[in-house]
Image (cartoon, one colour):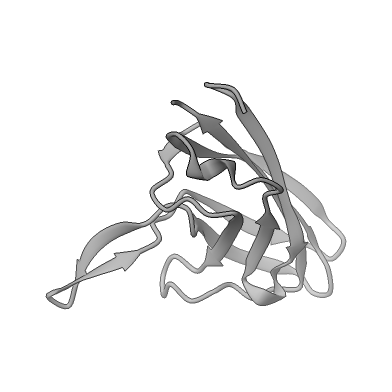
Length: 138
């Protein structure tokens, strides 16, 4: 992939597991400096009405925080949205581009969906997709 290239990746599936995965064909994130941005989040409410907040985080972006006087690794939020609708309702949320530097490159891209209030994985009978952009700087 060329310098300053942008790669478009769409992760899709059910929120019943609280995460989505996508395997990159090549492990191109290992070479150079890369950034990630969330472009859009779409969903279909499946079996019962939904109304919940979700925060996205990725295995590719880690940081440190102090919690209970202990420094720990964590996956910071890279986007938030409200997942709300009636059964079979479809919605999409677009994000302004905010670029996060990838700190832990991997061949597998994972997106986690957490409740911002208790940090537990959001498990919902919704089908979702998230489009992320990967940009190589160097």
